Image 1: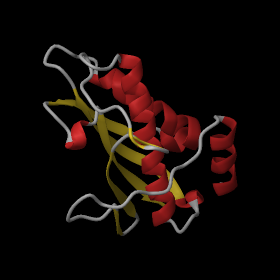
Image 2: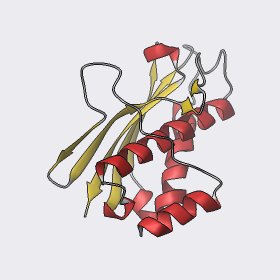
Image 3: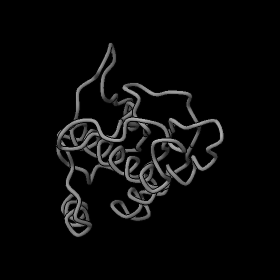
Image 4: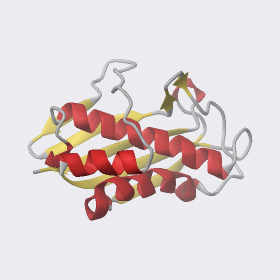
Length: 155
C-alpha cells in the first residue's frame, strides 16, 4: 500500500515535504500502542511558512483550503517518518483537529479544514475518512492561517 500511496500523491501532483522539527519543548509525533499522534502542523511550503494572516481578512476561503492542504502534507510527512518510511502501516486516519486563525465574523472553519480532509481521503482512500474538529482561533503560532494535528491508527 505504501507504493499505492506514493502513486496517489504523484497522480495528484503532490510531494511530501521533509518533516519539520518541533518549534518548542515537544516532539513532532508520539507512538502509543497502535496510535500515532501527530503534533500540529502549519502550512509550510518549500520556501518556509505560507499563509500568515487571518481568514476573513487577509485570506479567502480558497486560500485557507490551500493552507489546510499544506498542513495535511506535513501531517503525512510526519506519519511517514514515524512509520520508518512505510505509509502502508497506516490503517486509518482517526481524527484531524483543525484550528483556523480567523476574524470574528468568519464562520467557514469547517470548509477551510475540508482542504485537509479532502486530501486525506484522496491520498488514503477510505482509510482517510476521519472524525474532526474545526474551530476558530484568535491567533495561531507565527500568525499562520491554519494549524492541524492528527491521530492515526497503525496496523
